[in-house]
Length: 144
Image (cartoon, rainbow, N blue to C red; front, side, top):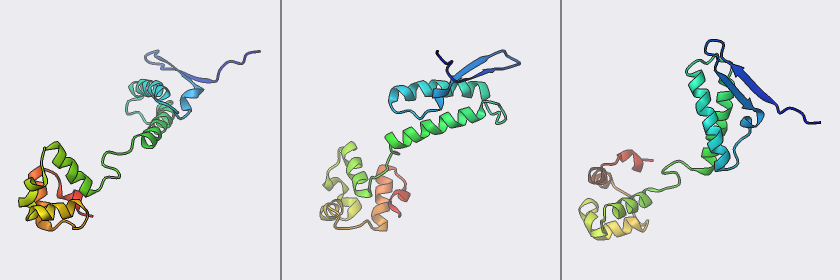
């Protein structure tokens, strides 16, 4: 004998809008296909609930959202995570088509650029300010 699938069925009394949530929408996604399906469900819930924290489906929206966020955190690290300042400068040099000699004015000579990029020197305050100005980046990136 087949048992009916567990689900939450909701009908908005004012709009008569119906939402059917099978129990598997509360499962954490294990791949991008499941993620996409849950994202559609979440969008539907957001449209229904808006900012009404007391809405009967608000907890469902929260659970699905947290599951998607956890998937994102596990599969897509934050931009800039695990990148150090030397790698950032190398990236900026590459994207701006610069060579070490092009940064000699900021570092006080090409030899200093080389030493920095090889991890033999740290940045001075004036070098940080020069890089900030040259690339239009925040000095906060270099302050630990």
